[in-house]
Length: 102
Image (cartoon, rainbow, N blue to C red; front, side, top):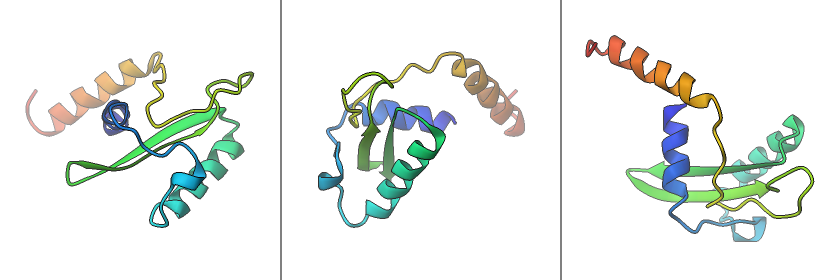
């Protein structure tokens, strides 16, 4: 989960593809799976990013920013994380304990 937040922050600084016409063949199956899952779950929008060896290789937005709006999600769209910070902090503490740092 912490990696997902880091990816979201990293992706916010790039200009990735925002629609299917801009997605390369390499990532097309992933993009199709993300869109299918977004629809299945009823999520209005989602943004994803892939980092390989420290470089952003793919970032894209799917759907809309709200269920009532028409504004598309882009790779740079920021989302509120709400109370997820509590879970991320607990995960970080757990990892630190497992590593013997705490």
